[in-house]
Length: 313
Image (cartoon, rainbow, N blue to C red; front, side):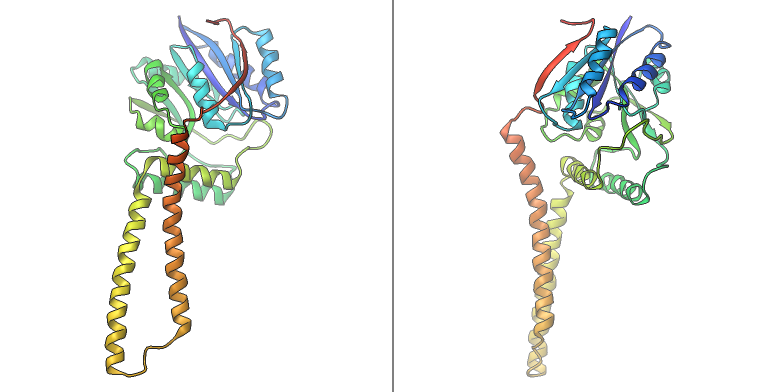
């Protein structure tokens, strides 16, 4: 029997925990040759998420849990879950049931075929605000043009991986993590399984539009240096344009005396150049800030408590 660890990052998911557990347990029961453990990672929830998980752990020894000292973010919760998972196979799922548990047999079949990872991607974005869907599609197009690491449009965190792939993911010890990119960067054979976008079982998404934008920027900075090249190209273009403008003004002044005037246009040009300079400095600042955080060597997460499970060391 192989041990399958199902890692579940949770943040304020008290309403979804019982329904998620029942649905996943029913799906896991049909997996041949597999014993299942459930590893819930409480990311500093402010509601009764941890209490709901502890209740499950008291009833089922296959349930384990980790609880952070505060909210460190989903990326940290995902990393902690992978680090503490004991299974030969490791699955990652969200607790809101937007990841269909019924796909687990299909994912396992792909692993049995020889793949190291079976991942889920959604083929539509029904139910999402139009602006969010548009921005998400543009993000995937942009990052795939900028980066050598392909990130599949619509990819979810829901995936089933072999132990060797998980070890490779954990070996990428970055503090600023963008897991979708890391999963692709480490390589290994991956089979993509398509599904429709599903609504949350209960509650509301914890991701605001601004948080998604900042997360997208983290992904671009983590897997591409193209913004730095763009800043350099903009600088060269502006130097060339300014040189031509200087020559033009000198020639015009020599031919038509008193033609070099126009303070309003000069102010506009100064503001334009200043704006571009600040934009380029902002790009440099993003890379510098990430480097600064990496050099601090702070832990990715801090555990407050953990427990449960029939497979304690």
